[in-house]
Image 1 (cartoon, rainbow, N blue to C red):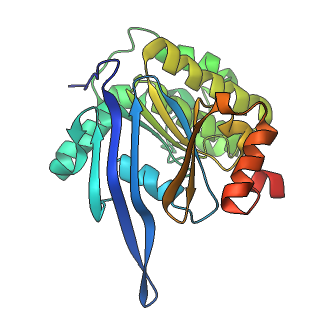
Image 2: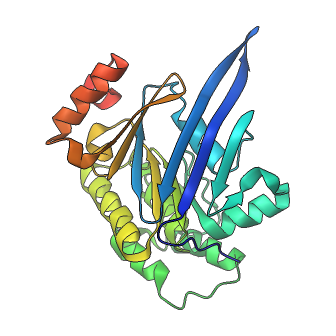
Length: 259
């Protein structure tokens, strides 16, 4: 059964989250004591330099990686109190995942890949969600194609459609605009906004691009695994002000600015 949080209860509740990895003869703390709360309809972007812990945080929030300390609750459910099978079922019903590896099924068409979560969940497409996403993401021309006949950007948009088709309560997206041109990147952010406003979906998106981050309502900055800044888009007049704030905190320009 899908968990449906109330309007004011946290969809994502992360407390004192820590994850360590062995590196050579030492240990690296990829995520260090992060506490974060997102409510229904929040659209948040996470920025940070390479190695700051952005992707690790997303994997932890998805329950794909086990933390060394701290707790992760999604819609009130403690992910790591579940068995592996229970966690998989919970993730399938409640979380849409968009990662940098598209993981499309090579024998299925674009339309079939988008519809796959509905098939696995035994859900009919009564609301026409597949057709809606095909239109919103500009995928009409790739519906009948298999992944090997698509460009990288087309594959990424199909993967995004697959993540959104079940209208999950939470979307976790790792660099979702990475293979998209600027027009399709804007289209994707508009789709995220629509999900948040119309369906109360919560979106947590990792991006290196300040222009993409500026599309979110909340902007989080990680440095060396620590959450060092939580602001809102309204705190900045322009994307240039956000970029300057980022540089002042991290002492390095974001990749999109560095070129």
